[in-house]
Image (cartoon, rainbow, N blue to C red; front, side):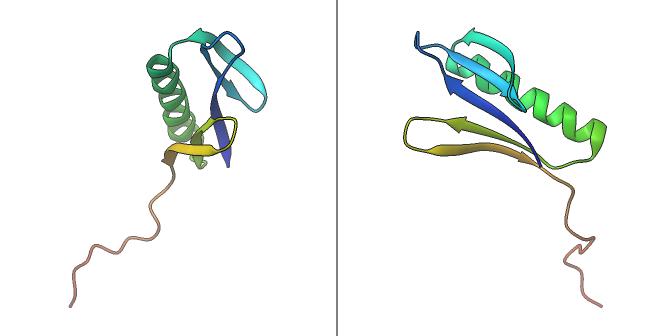
Length: 79
């Protein structure tokens, strides 16, 4: 699984990181979440791997998005 993180920095703004590498810093929360979701979605579409976006806070990790392949092909139809 590939994880993108959104985390508040010491000056109160937010950063987006991927595998420990900072992709963006100094963002307001909304744009940081949007950028992380867009990057995770693109990564998933390009690689087919499961990707996830998490917001890391002082006391908790909050999942914000999860992109994965559908499990099986069941359509709900019965014979």
